[in-house]
Length: 152
Image (cartoon, rainbow, N blue to C red; front, side, top):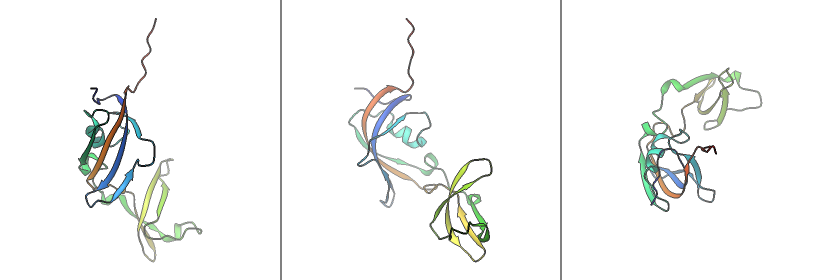
């Protein structure tokens, strides 16, 4: 039977959870996730985890933080002056906002604390620093991700 290898486009159902059992994402009720293995479309540990699977196979993989969204970085937590918030936004802990880096790049941030004069914003990915567990079911292998042109 065919096994997943780098360059294959695959369809896979998944359920992602944290070590405490909290589910953070799932394809349940949706189309399976489709991606090209080894292309950087998914986190490195996910690519590694599906490699070698066969259609119909189910398995659980454990991905350490370093192969997922990396470690948390303290330098990605910043203070933002409260008086620089738009008048129509009342900052609240847990609120997610999008900031611009001045070069057109949008960076999602989460408000972690609201003080009298500043608001603490965390630009770390919400799953940074966390080990992840994925329950996988390989639906299909659709061959090489890149089309080949055959000249007559």
